[in-house]
Image (cartoon, rainbow, N blue to C red; front, side, top):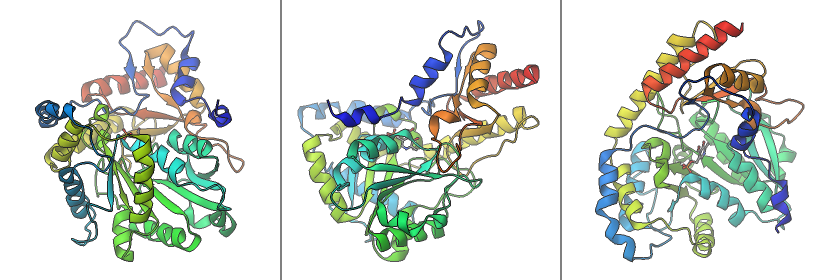
Length: 392
Ligand SMILES: Cc1ncc(COP(=O)(O)O)c(C=O)c1O
């Protein structure tokens, strides 16, 4: 067995299962706020497109994906991030991925070079668990950058000796779970550091389309300002944007040399996107109407949270994403007691972060994923209200 497997930590949902085992909830329907799995109905035209293209089962899909898909993605990214028309080339700058998760994981396996003298993969803390697992299995050492009150790490405080050892930096904007997004100046700063210290900037922007006021800046806009994609890889997904996590559809876009190496790796890995998912994904990326409606649905849920809980807890609408990252004291005790009292499941912040630099940035938090339909979320939030009132 690969000995590195033993360095992986238990996944948060496994830990949650253990935490709640032996607790008997009341006889109410379970409301599950623990998983960040969008549960809005999939757009009908996407489902129809999948069905219409099922005949494609008789073909082996290409790792590079269809030209239609790549061109559609590039048209989307060019418009969304206000890029110059010829900044992205469909042959060199984009690869489809079976969801952003596998791409975020495999990029470290493909591109981390243990003989380079650079041993660290930097990541935010709290974080999407794949970053840490990817670093460990690639043979790198994860280095945690604690998110401060802004909800993002203070990248300007990272010391030169750490940048020197950095092979790859995972950035998440908007961030899961804090919801904080970087500004374009932050991306400028990180791109400059990646080029100065020769590391890969892996920008996980899978929540970039779930926002409320302003569309969050993306790394691609900053790359275009710098005139190059050197060292930059951006990861996007339809899971949140179009509420189709089951389709497993995303893409990687950026530096042509890095993508050429990644494509070679993926040829051996064999994770091409099924042809009917490619066709439906092109249809989804070409349409904004359903995304606008989706954003409206999430905005209503954040308004409901403020209305139902706002006098008991500080509820703020984040820059993006669909999480409440609530400060509740002991997050594990809150999660267990809420489940026992109201049959509502949330996720302790402890499970999403590690102790680093003398502090644990998730210990006093829980994450509430507002992913269900509005009525279900309202019911769950009302039960949290009742729990807070009876337990205090
Ligand atoms: C921060 C972050 N990145 C990436 C992903 C992966 O999403 P997908 O593989 O569905 O694109 C998730 C899923 O929850 C996430 O929270």
